[in-house]
Image (tube, helix red, strand yellow):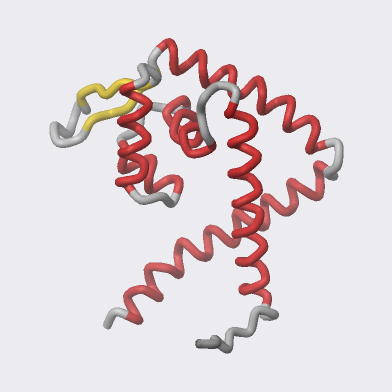
Length: 157
């Protein structure tokens, strides 16, 4: 079956580029973390835990991932001694995730390798232009976040 989608409209072109860049960033992250026996997906979860003590559901929401996917990664990281679960002070049904000392060491090593990759890539990019693009992406994200709920309610009436 052939679909008749206009991929020349601005939002479709934007989306296709974002999907492609996401794939490239994930591949790059896999390269950065490979020598540490980690992956982009694990790095995402470790990095999020490194900025606080979230629940699995909070990580999934913040990153736009399925809770089950984050749960699997969190369980593996815990089995490997990089993270640990601790009781949530206000909700007995959920657990908080925290980095262990080993997890902090691994995350620090990942960031050290990332810094090298970052310098290499930034040698080919204009920092101001990249910041402008980042700000524009933030605006698109805010609009999408707001409109997704309204559109979902509309199509599910």
